Image (tube, rainbow over all chains, first blue to last red; front, side, top):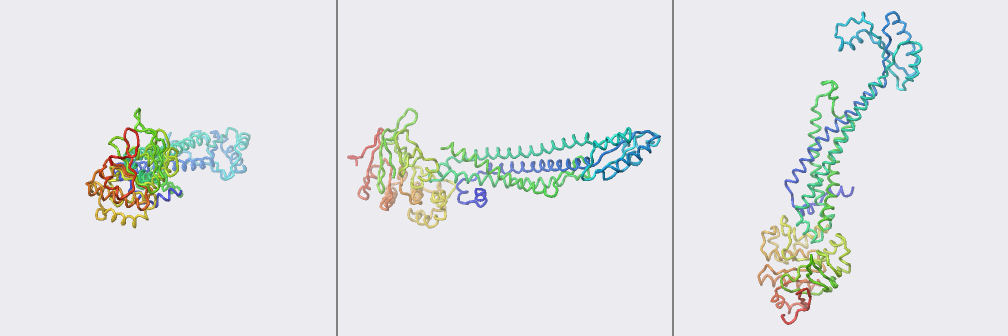
Length: 297
Length: 224
């Protein structure tokens, strides 16, 4: 922490001891900027997927669908029994019988808008919404089996688990991409710092001859690369965040892009990207500098 | 201050010198002479731990140079001012910044202002302080190198052919500066092949003249 503070405050005299390296400096800023830009998108996708997975999981976990047999003679009795069972089950907050129009809307993608629902044996659907405590699904199934023969209670587990698993994997991949981006920044900075140290061997020799310790020499390089990486990352992050903001929102494109972006406290994450880039650059340059200085002995 | 005890140095199968001993006592003045290639520069580099002896012991201020880590070597070098034959400047810095470099690297840059102006006047380089090393003449560079060597007020000053690239008048001026430093209590070791210059200084300073030839270090005699 003390080292980082010293870096920020800096020592202009020490900085001047090492000559500026134009191309390496520009490349470092550019690569750090590009990596930060990519990190913003990886972060946005990861956070959005996580958020969406949580929403889906909550929504699906709280609701279930009861399907009653399509028997025109017993339909009303079965529905009455089912509603009675459901309404007397602890943990069930709401029971809603889907109307004909709603059922027709559900079938429309497969059978078209002109389906004569009244003349077809279509099972009656009932939406069951749990309260915060939830209900005993196995107990409810047992009661329904006994009192409403042929009724099937679907708690959406078959849908929910693969959906949440897929979302979790996408989120994990997003974080892995961010880690890879961090590793790439570290590798790039290490190479640039090593090249710069090698190009400045004579300067380092003179500094040592006049009594410079390794930490003094390293500090000039570390400060330079840390600030370059931080600056590049700030520019890349700003452009990346602007790019994310330009993406269409979920109400414009449905759920395909899921409204990729940052929400609430998640806005803190992009702010961390330049900071983390600078920390990665600090550690990478410091390690490279001390290693190279040791080899130059 | 600096002591070489039965020191040998070589590279590959070549031995430059062996079992060589030298003691630089506080306040002493030594000239080191010898033909080109005899190993004068190598001997000097051993004295400021820029090289490690193949055998024997080099002691810097009482410490065995062989066991000093890089930081300890840096600390020892802050007590030794070195005037290199080729001056060894940083060409992207101006002369004032180059002269102040030993203070800068010791995190004592705030001490530079007063010392620096005094030194620039002392070596007659105040008008050239803003120029970069390649813009200076050989003599000016040598004087700047001397100023850099003394800015931290080191206990020992080692100069490698400090008059090699300058005319007679300038060489006399540089040597006068070194004699002046010796009178201030500094220990001086100068490597030179210029015997005429040594002769010219004999009346000004009580110096010990050593000759390095064929791997042997001897007291110079009749030729002086």
